[in-house]
Length: 410
Image 1 (cartoon, rainbow, N blue to C red):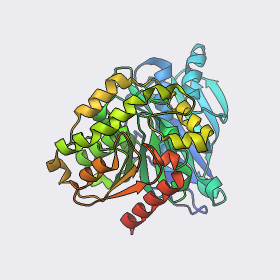
Image 2 (cartoon, helix red, strand yellow):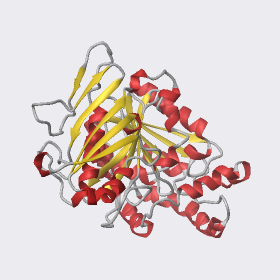
Image 3 (cartoon, rainbow, N blue to C red):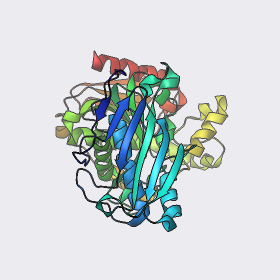
């Protein structure tokens, strides 16, 4: 998505691509350090048509649209200084407020709610805001802009976060986590990239009311999130389950992928030899399953992490407890999704496999065979790690990815 110029001496008019706008006004204006966002309604995309579902649904759609405008101005919800909410029915104040607070999980900005008799298009809610231009902040890690929100896809609400600027880097989590599991990567890479993390259906803050979570839905969901954020192409990273998402997206949208990193995953790459290489390590893992009830022990972590850093191992267990993923339904869908060698031969982007040298779920031997099926693929093993070296040995994992991205962007 085009970024607003940063010259503070001249007022700038902002238009968010794909969002409805009357010719009488711009979506927002920037003057000096301030962004003034026009009154925004709960319309669908570029149509002057209000979303259905009452005040709550209108409020959510209005704030999603407002978020797209802020994004076009290079800002996010965390940059808002003040909001003004117009409401035609003050008896719906609590319903509006519940939806409103979903977009401000921390301390919300100052706000006024104004009752009015009518709004354009017969809307129930209209919101305008004043925000601080992120470019006015001091440089450094503390000044990295953070934006979060929801995208509605097929009746589900998908949570995402976007931090920093630069080449987009999208992180797709595994079945043991959610967007927050990348806490050791996001601050590192947001210094030079626009880092997007998100929750798959049923994980973290994303819903899965229809029970359709799986690789096919995840590919559609990722497409919708990138479209919403105006990201044309990105570096993709998929950890374990997220590998099916990242690889599926790369095969479906090859021109939108700068590079592909498959971390401790095969992402559906299967041959008879690969299947045989998975059998013995997974049998050993099943034999040790009773330890999963102990503090810090998890099939996605090597036991050495529990010994040297029990607090972080426990944190991994806790992060996996957020959301209500139906893993009994998702897992069979993962393993039923198989990528043929012919499809892999069509990949035209650099591919990096990262794997823990002690990973029992996707052992290095199986990953090496998968890498051989891809034209431009390389593999790096992280020593002393199990299924989650990004969590167990973040410094080594981050350095590996940083080197790969630097080579891709050279």
